[in-house]
Image 1 (cartoon, rainbow, N blue to C red):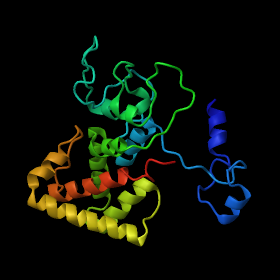
Image 2 (cartoon, rainbow, N blue to C red):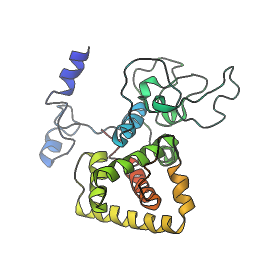
Image 3 (cartoon, helix red, strand yellow):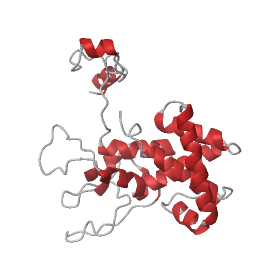
Length: 242
């Protein structure tokens, strides 16, 4: 099975660009000849895995028991069990290992259309709702991933903010930003930095989200501003789309 999956993923057909040219569109308007790669949103588990991988937090351990990462309070109310969150490296394991309870569906997965396993699902439906953006902006797992990405580029470029922004963009989207995209990143960072300079409590509150340790040498306002930029990058449609 792994050999078959590898063959599919490395085939020329699967690896085609999603870009549509007039010639391809005229010849194959419905993509029945697979002249281009379709763009689809990542499945719920992969959205979280991707954010953790980009941030450098992902625990790629294989096998072992299920884990219980961050979850809003009250989800398990009314069930015959009590939810006890895991800590440490267990928080950053892949979505495959997240504990699944049919009567208390993991919220972020449900928002991104993961089935609840009450019935067999051979094809997932994909929706697009404002709730998905709210999850990417506010769920502790994604806020912490944004902070992890900010720390990652801070370590890679400790003295150059512009290079940090470019690195964050490349880590997230896998390509270099265009000039107008760089301008947006710089403007966003400057605005957030000014806000956090004036409100240091807000910066500290943002950086406290999640259990991963903070770098001692980082300036809280600068790290919080870069975290805000990273949060924007993780929320982009291009980031969660294959």
